[in-house]
Image 1 (cartoon, rainbow, N blue to C red):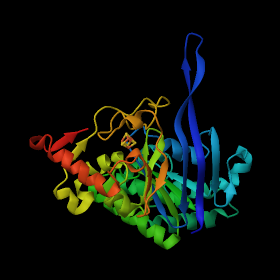
Image 2: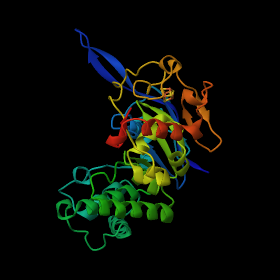
Image 3: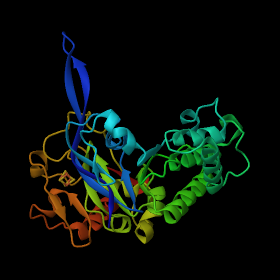
Length: 350
Ligand code: SF4
């Protein structure tokens, strides 16, 4: 598969002021992440708020500096390009935000909003306006060119944002929680629209979401983030059916509808405690402070990245420390543990 985005061992830090002299200390919020997005592929980044998903999105667009790693966008290594040299390549990756109202200029009409990204192209104004009109029609908004953002519903505003993102014909659209501000039926419409645009235009998406039921509908592959690192990765259906990381299992248990027949038996796993403070993860496995399966080795040694026969990869000592608990037994183990505790509450805290 042709890759439109390749991210290799990328780390991102934020400066933090501390101490009496206010010295700046870097805070490592994303650690050595590597992944690809293929042409026409939808790759989802999932995880709790604060896990580093949106930081990755901004870093791959070079809106944030990175500490190390490499970013290749549409076959061009953009890692160290100057802002000036980067300009012609920016069109290849566009961003759709969660809140379309705040991301649309309220003083511009719908057609002006969609036409604006085309102004750097060798096109006459008439050509740009015609293209913007066609884009609005392609997202189901024909005949509304002269209206302002406040005159549209939330779902319609998100359609305008998608049309604007499509305007420069990008290879990749990064969707940062694109439907989480919308009601359920509007969510479904926007997901269907994104999917049909993917099929008709061959555009790829990096789809950031905390909602696994949405992810299951649209994503080919899923990357699970915890405390700034990727802990599991694989084809969506396989990760959902046979996760290899207890954190993924906990996320899935919060959305019973997505785990199929298993949900009839599984109870919800409620994660106790918070994500580690950004930049200060615990030693060993970052999840050990919240994991019900934590062993001694988890508190001191970082688990190795391991590929499994069913095409899913992840990092967890359960599979490499000689534990009898392999990935196929993980869910059963969790279900047994849940069944033996707290039956009456219908959920188990871990
Ligand atoms: Fe849990 Fe240990 Fe696996 Fe981390 S490595 S997820 S603490 S079992």
